[in-house]
Image (cartoon, rainbow over all chains, first blue to last red; front, side, top):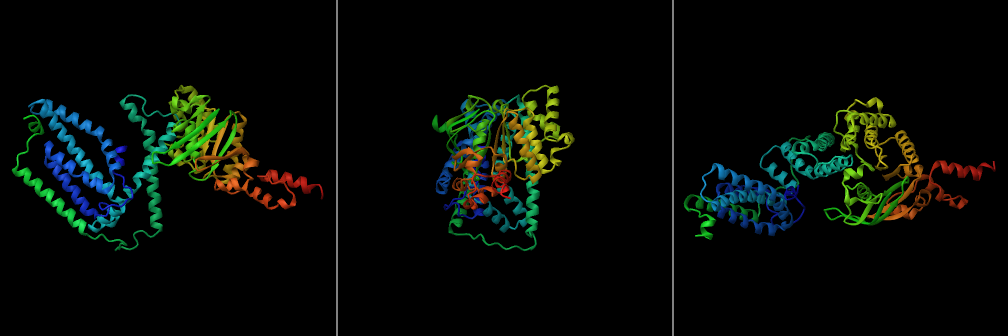
Length: 262
Length: 273
């Protein structure tokens, strides 16, 4: 679960927190795009390191490190499946080459987690909703989206209570073989789903009794406005994208092993 | 027997929920754990069946340290009934719901059948045997939750907020039921805010505030002490308040419920008539 901790917003203030979420999303998308563009170790490593200053400026190091730790197990899975599939189905050049290719794929995943974690750690659900709304998405969808995000911690807490209740009735989650273990989660999942449905019905009733949707055209107390910092981040994102495309088109990227062991 | 020795517990988010709690509950005792929201009552009882392990200090159940055994092993002795029954229902019938724990504990089919019947009749639920627990009323759901714990006949029964969402008649039945359980030799611990309910049950009362135990004694002593009760963000029972208002008449002040009040008043004023 700790991987998801790296996506949970905590109220804090930093220059990164104050940026326009739309611009932050643009930045994350650029990083995403560039990470997918390259499958070599070197540019991905650069991409990974280049984001660390953001983490430090946003002062979310601790949560960020936790999300990195949480993704460790997935990284291991990605690394080993890549290694095996390249070995059996790819063209085998050398062991070093195999390891570097697999490491690059793993790093690509880590870079994606890293950038999305920065985005979600520094963007409040309210801001996110506002950004969606001002991008012209109907309010109903924005509201559903922000509510879903806001309910994640509530559901996590509820899942914990349910687990406690079932463990108190002798349920052992770690007991049994693979199928058995999956089955063990049924007594957790059913109450969780039932209560989520109940909660959403209750929420709908409460919202409607407070005249939700009475006026078609809504106005907002806060309006997102681009500031200097936002234009700066747009410039950075465009520069990263431009540079990446240039490198991708014209510059042959050496393998890391070639540099270390010429 | 439950022994908590200088127990400290902090949640992962840093909240210090228990701050040096020592408490011994003998076999066959009836204890009410009271205090404001966030005082640490639920956290403490979750230590009694091993759901939580102390960060410092230790909890012993019949001499066994809770850190040495699994929750499932402890649960056979310590039945914990949670506040919200909806956090445990998942089966299509009340019968299956009640047999869930019995299956986990490895009882055979025959004794499961017998124990389910016994637990359901104990709580007046026999007619709902094949009904879905989701279709029952709030009070009935709470009783099914209780039946699903009592089915394996644990030695110690802990009820977290048993009176919440119950109407007066249900509370009365619950009180009689708890007293009956206790009379049969079970250790009963209730966690509650409901001071009137406690005043009528008259258990040993343990008051908690900010992760510490601030008072421990019999109902008539603890629930008539205005300062103590206020520290736990509670208000004296109505009858105790009335008698503390009337103390100038020379009436005793350690009266907590209507039954006791009637007795005292009869003794005092009944004869002069």
